[in-house]
Amino acid sequence: MSKSLKVWFLAPEVAPFSKTGGLADVAGSLPGALKKLGADVRVGLPLYRMVRAGNFAMHEVFSGLDVPVGDETLQCDVLETTTDEGVPVYLFDRPDLFDRPDLYGTPEGDYDDNLERFTFFTRAALLLAKRVGFHFDVVHCHDWQTGLVPAYLKTLYRDDPFFSQAASVFTIHNMGYQGLFPADKLSTCGLPASEFHPDGFEYWGKFSLLKAGLVYADAITTVSPRYSQEIQTPEFGMGMDAILRNRSVDLHGIINGVDYHTWNPATDPHLAAHYSVRHMDGKEACKAALAHELGVDHRFLAQPLLAVISRLTVQKGHDLLLEIVPDVVRLDVGLVILGAGEKKYQQALGFLGQQHAERLAVRIGFDEPLAHRIMAGADMLLAPSRYEPCGLTQIYALKYGTVPIVRAVGGFDDTIQQFDPSSGQGTGFKFVEHEPEAVLDRIKEAIQTYHNRAVWEELVNNGMRADFSWDKSARKYVALYKEVRQRRQDPGTGFEQDRASSRHEKGER
Image (cartoon, rainbow, N blue to C red):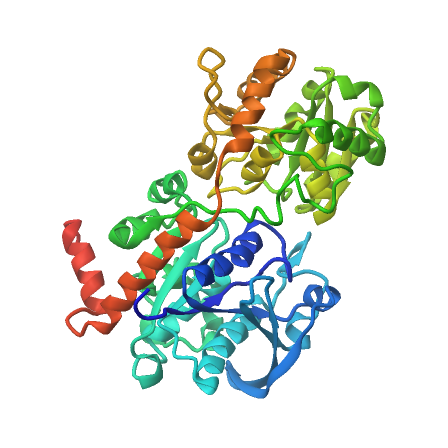
């Protein structure tokens, strides 16, 4: 890298400091991979209660940062810690906004002041960079919570010399979360009213922070090639497919990598025994330990043990899961479910767990160590998502010798190859239709394969040898950073020209 790229990496959650899902894993591991490639990358994150509870070593680096939010000026302190790879992480401390049990809301719904919370975070992040003189080349923003940043750079800070050559990359982790707020709250985030129109951040009479990111970023990425195509269609675009088609020349699908230092059965500290593709005995020990821990009848140790590890939402297919659970347990298999989310799914799954206690174990909540133990102890991972931008659990499952059964959408389709017993090729089982029969057919196929031990071992080995480490994807991000940096620094190009040329190439007016 001839000139070190300076990257300001802003995410609403970053593992291991705070986490609700796969976004945190990506934001926790990608910066380290970028650093290995020579980038000067620094991470910004709210100082949630979850971060404090982790007892991470932190020290104050800035006190009394003034941050405009609506007609008020709020202050915050900024603390610093580092990742295991030595990447600096800056934590924005405002207890009345971030010292809460959950990151974004409760099972009953989102926090009412999420606009204030993430307006504060994003403006504070830009202001801190200016105050400490971090002249970043690219700010990499993640999901709606950071969608204001590209808009700020193109509006409020457009004429500020400090930000004049700063480019923005906005990553969509899930189109289903759009950061929608009523128009009368526009003054809270400080965006100019002149941009409240259909070509700006206005969305059906409201305004969307996700749309702000999509419209104003210099480049847009999403977390798998298949999902980048799907979200340009009405079925998966969640009402924003036309916006994404309009910006298709700037939309890139880059598959998520995984951190094999954290997710590796040969070294995982949460497991009862370690194992690898060459020495698999430990997996049986992990299965026995898991059955004991969760109270699953030990006679199922000779039968397949299926696992579901996910947020409990309609997106993850839990409406479909509720339909098929009685049929699955009648297949003489064990089933383990771990997750938290919508209250109706938590209650319904809890009831099913009581009905089928010997063969169905349900654990409601976020429990990272237990997730590792389930991944190691299960034989199959079931993921019946309606849509899936990338998904990481199926990639973790491959490494742990746990065969994925997934719907052929988004990143699931990109990362899992349907197993063909005649050729021995493939890493899992995929179904297309989001219907109970389609899922059950694939589960039955997987069970049948499981009882042919030689074929099953071949399938497991295929998955464990697959490589989804970050290096390849991180290099794609670096190339994209360089591209948008060049576009911003070249006086012959500009944001409005980019948007106009994009529309012209599509024949749009």
